[in-house]
Length: 257
Length: 320
Image 1 (cartoon, one colour):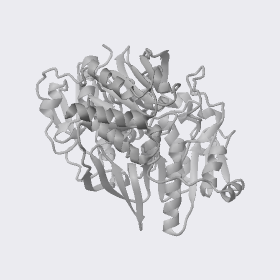
Image 2 (spheres, rainbow over the protein chains, first blue to last red):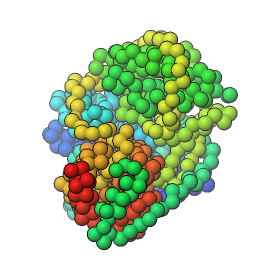
Image 3 (cartoon, chains in turn yellow, brown):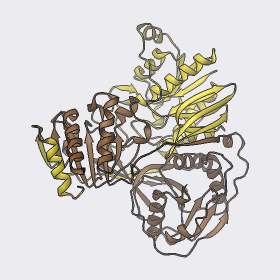
Image 4 (tube, each protein chain N blue to C red):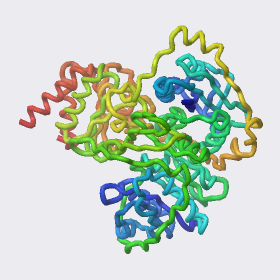
């Protein structure tokens, strides 16, 4: 079974973030593999292992100046990586991203496409299902567990009340929630092997999508960005054994108790 | 008013419609005189959507076990061909995001998500909280409509206007091919005690500072004693300590309780955006410089594993 995992290299979420003059997220610093994507990579590796054959390909869009995030996925065990990287992609929206990823994924012809429910930098959360529509595949989002039997996919899908059991025929797109599998750490051997694994870097022209990406393709614009009204900090005490008492008094003052 | 018509996707739940759906209907009515709702399933919602401002209810009907995303999007796309609204508003939810994404690709129209405000300024302008809610970006569509807008819970108030029942119009799904093949084969309801996380007047949330998964029970017990709900930071959901449904934050739920008690949560921007609208915030964290203290009305610098058990004891002795 061949599995594609959509991954994103993002600025370190722990570092201060800023917008550039065009209101795009500043991505000039070091890029890392979005932690949310490591669950999909792990799940893909487990599914391929269970199927007894096939490989995992990671597919991405963004700057190829720093490939550490993709190398990380390769070091975990993915066989190869494809990244669509092009200055023309700056300012591409979620649908444009889905078009780019769909075009790249068609080259792999996978049985299953996995993605996180949303990225940890943009949080749009629509790209995987837009991708499914473009690839003419069913999609099951918010998976807590994924099993494949023959060419049928079974997913436990998170719901408000609990979870649903959902099935679909392959090929399909699945988004996985965090915490459902424990992503492996890359071994030293894996890290060494990743250095020689293939990374294909494609341009927008390679995919024939020139007029559908970038700000023009996005058909949306930021009007302005303003500082939100700040919430004021209240009182802060160092716990001296009386922390709980202070909380109880506060809850009384706001009539919760 | 520059808007002629808005459609709102309203999501059925337990024989009614979700609160976020009603919030969107209410707000749409303030922006535009003509509001239509789109729903699915076997329920009767004409009176309810009418009461919240919709004059027409497009009903996709029973989905025969299909996941809603593909069929509902296909039905809306067919309606758009017959006569498009200025924009389509969709609640942020598991199914809402699927519908919006499918519809966006089908119509080849952009989607704006994580919207927390919507105004008519010669066309729709949406608000998005960025960088943990410290800044607000405002955006608009620049191409041909209808644009698709996915709105977060609790962005608007749900206010009935007392309108008459909406006229129900059946909406056909049409052929879906492979995209419509996902089927729900079983539904599991997990036992939940106390109020729902998004509706609870008190939310007690736990984070990495608890130290290990077993101590999340302290958070649950404090929540129970306060008749509240237990929430979690992304860090402990990612670590597998608690299910995703407990997560408060950018990824996860937005809560605005009377009081939010953050236990061992440092206050990553990802978390803050989901709870900074709370009326009162209490934080317990051993790091005096934790960002959560910048927005807390009451901050206790201390070990959550001593403060929380004392709080539980104090609450228990009050109860007895």
